[in-house]
Length: 268
Image 1: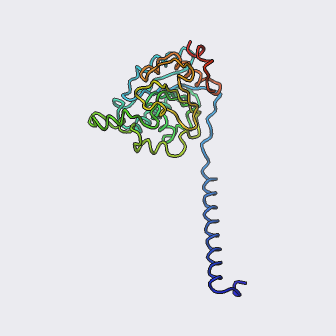
Image 2: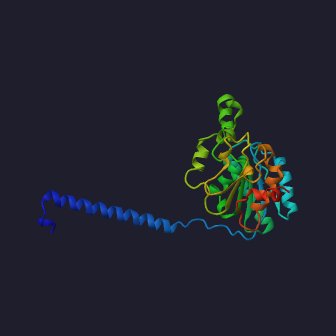
């Protein structure tokens, strides 16, 4: 049949057939690779394990002590993680510290998973742990409090005005930093844990405050529950409503979006 065609027409059909075979082969390779690299399975949600609380920039454990105590009163095993150095170094190194803390907590308690609460930069540390250091298979819930997931203008201002006073973690928290650009490429809430963010429209450190939201997470603004709340960044871990939201999010049942009707209950 090809022999009966004009030479130019014959060459065109052969080229089209060759291209089709190449495309089909490439698709087959992709399919095989996909089957050979199964995704992370969601962590079982019905058995809450220990809670790890990750401090923010500067690593001040005291900022989370009241919240950890509230969780212990509720019967949870809650530990505030001690970050490396002064808490202003590479956030990836802090993620390794979190991984070691998670392994220790699982060995100590015999649990299958941990819940993680990351305050401010600690929420970014938790995300790095999940994505790059095996946390996707160990974290049941990841909750972040006022975390600059897409960077904060405060860090950008520090770089521009006082660069010598903006160490590695500060630079990594600037909008469009290499670390955040890579972290936010693709899926912001990868499989494994259930993701929850809690943030305040009155946050003066994480700016704009909506940078604390994540695609694919249950995003809860404090003012969406209690409209008259004026809680600022430093008060998030100790605010009664935020404590109620954390306890709800880390409970045995899957977290659901609270409404203004829940304001009084969650604040008490």
